[in-house]
Amino acid sequence: MEQLVQELKEHLIEELNLEEITPEDIDAAAPLFGDGLGLDSIDALEIILILEKYYGVKLANSAEAKPVFYSVNSLAEYIMQNRK
Figure 1 (cartoon, rainbow, N blue to C red):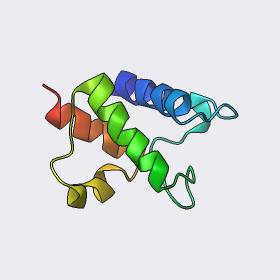
Figure 2: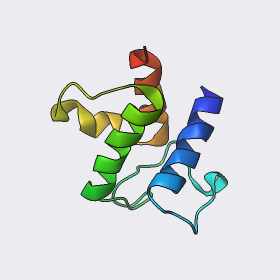
Figure 3: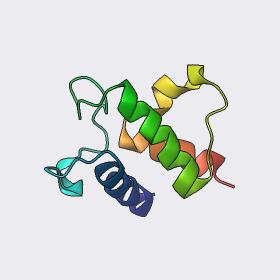
Figure 4: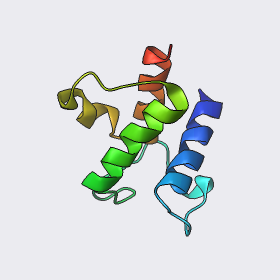
């Protein structure tokens, strides 16, 4: 799980062009949107692509996205449960 969290941080930085941030700067438990990392709806679409591209995981419906996209930890848990 710890390695997956680290990987996710690196993918988020790379795919969302967060050049000024290092993986160590991202609190895995902090919200990704709003006050936390400050991501927006465009970033949410990129996260969906990250899940599909690197982990083969698709969201069944958009209603489940909010709790899954809460933090890096919640993304990692979702990947662990749904990875093939």
